[in-house]
Length: 116
Length: 116
Image 1 (cartoon, each protein chain N blue to C red):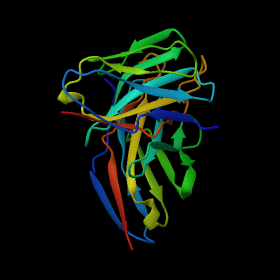
Image 2: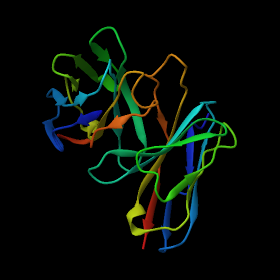
Image 3: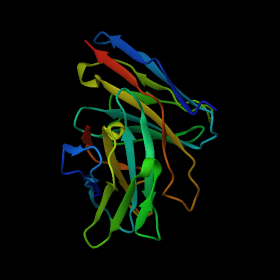
């Protein structure tokens, strides 16, 4: 049971380049999330998914896209990289029931992205 | 609007002394409250959560937190600090079912330094 895995661990992009951050979970969780972490700012939610085929915007979705074709995978796409997207990106997952709200989120190790 | 405040950017404690990391929140309805810890270059790890019931919640690594509804606080505590407790601690909150959609609101984080 690997939990939540993310690739790559670190990447340098040039302005205008594109890339996909990969995220996979093996816990059969229905919810998955993408966050970015900037120094002194806590975590900001980019996108989330409540199940395969269903995604929705979080607090800071501009410049990003996601898809969820399977329960396990939730890739994050950056189409035109900008310096403002320099950050550490975390993927997380949780199992949320209809009557819940207190479900624990499990995090991957993160991807450090530098846009120059 | 939902919000979380961690009023201290950094807390310094001598090893063996008790520690407190503060968190206050603002949500509508009954809150779901969480504490996570982040070690350097790692993802976030779940420590404990308050959903309902006893105001004193016990979690991993000897940590506990007390929910205080009148003061809208959820401070993290440990009776005797260890050097290995040095890390970045995040408080997070989710409001009642009318708020968001399982989206957590995160504090900015508090850096805990335990000195030998």
